[in-house]
Length: 291
Image 1 (spheres, rainbow, N blue to C red):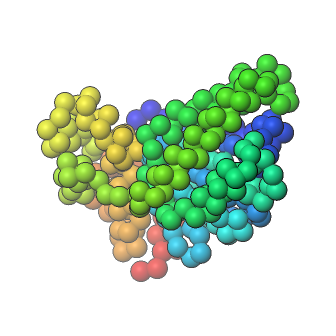
Image 2 (cartoon, one colour):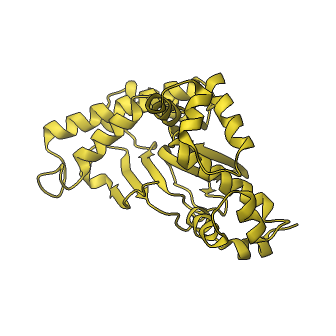
Image 3 (cartoon, one colour):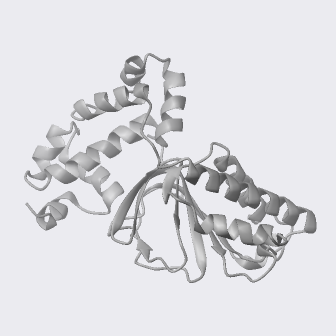
């Protein structure tokens, strides 16, 4: 499985020229990093979009497990973190908006500015599947704001600023609509059949061709369908499920037994993969886990 190169972009409010727009960020992690400590954003809402991978966030004592193509938001003042878990490998975008901007929120006139802020505050579902257009919108926004997208440091040109405003408003309206469609939902019947197969065969190496047979699709069509529904390629999903199962098995079994049961070629390779996703050595993880 190819590893993604690591990169990070975070653009502050000075580049936008839009009242209320504080930050747009994007990270691409090739390996897990230390988790986020509890924090909050005063007077600001944060909206995340996980393009690829998996990630856990915690708000108000509740943990939310995001998979690729999920969105998640926190309201002003809400304390959130990664529930003592690492920031996992994958691609994630975040936007922070100050809702207490008194006028011209994101360049909108009244009453539209107040209406949009109200809709953002009243999104009924914190964790939900994103609209299919969200990835391309965010990719274009980060392109405009990257160093390559700007001729010089400082604010965007008027035309680029208008384009950014248009993209941002489209992103927010689609996000509000997606939230109203409800929770993140479940996999399709076809994908549920595939997931059941993976659950029963975690002791084997990932066999994408076999999963395509289970789905009754060509391998190329299956990969596309799986990535669209589950947010990660099938081989990576299979490996992540092994690590989640290992976290449970390590409470009662030693590292060598777990590696063997989950079909890893050696305990050393298992330890490498486990640490990549959890930042923990499986031997130490086992000692710390309650039996």
